[in-house]
Amino acid sequence: RELAEAMDRGFRAREAAVEEALQVVADGAAEALREAKDAMRTEYGELAEHYRETREEVRGLEEEALRRVAELEAGAAETSARGEDMIGQLQRQIGEVNVRVSSEKEAAEEAFAAARADLEGRLQEAADAAAAGAAEAQRAGEA
Image (cartoon, rainbow, N blue to C red; front, side):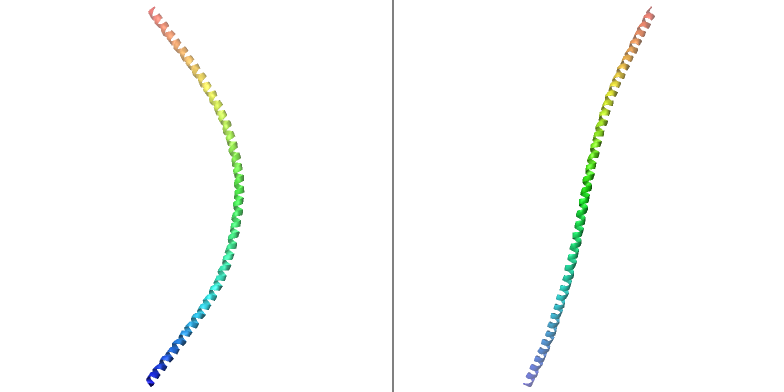
């Protein structure tokens, strides 16, 4: 019986030691959990502040980009108007050049036709003169 009591006391002492060790572990885990939660709250606060700052920077960049786009659009509209004006002037100048080229072409064609007719007339006269000379030479050879 003493042995059983001694064993019972030993088990109880061990059980108490295990319970005490488990309590120490549980207390440590609870403390670690509280510290982790505190650290997460602090980090979340820092992240939230960083997010707000970043969002403000992004808004500033968006506003600047929109301002620049508006400036570019205004510049593009002005450039487009100037380009259209230049295109109109070029089209008028091309039209004037086409009129001049057309009239010069007509004049050249008329001059070419006149020169051709003159050359054909002279060739005909030369051919007639040659034929007359050949006929006269033939008569003279017969006489």
